[in-house]
Image 1: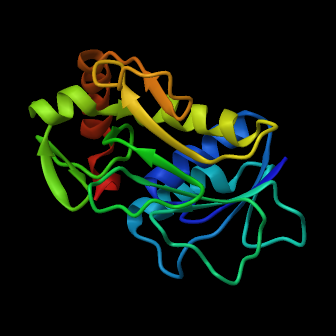
Image 2 (image 1 turned 180 degrees about the vertical axis):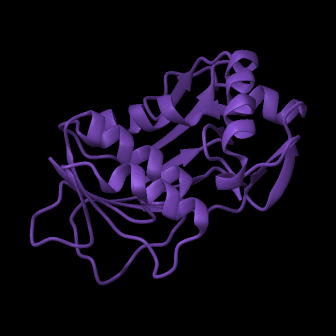
Length: 197
């Protein structure tokens, strides 16, 4: 299958493109004109993959995936999916995947906190500890959802601790080991701090 992903060099887009490529899909990536140092760094990882191409191709995409409502209206695709953070002021769309606060390699962060949805949230903050999910398994799950036979409607990701107790197909609960995950991420940050900027 072939997917079109906007904001492909953002840290979220990068992880989704990686998951799609790992699942054997072709990916066309779109991004703005100028890249930050981190986005340029991430572009070197996925840009070398034989199944990835930057820019539009003359093909029928399985889905067009945009991040945070940055939909290009000139791109017509029967299956357009928006991926955004589940903030209180996020408008509901027909086909949308809502994310909780995420953590992972290359995330916007400093020594003590993550930058999320315009806010600085400490790693030991109760909200982060209860709700945050690792980006890699989230994007791997999204890749599986996108390549399924049925159309995507609305999905929401939760940590197992806070997932609503209901038989809701749209609620996806994931487990995590936040202590070990953060330990590994702090080591990665210490090693590659320059590229996190």
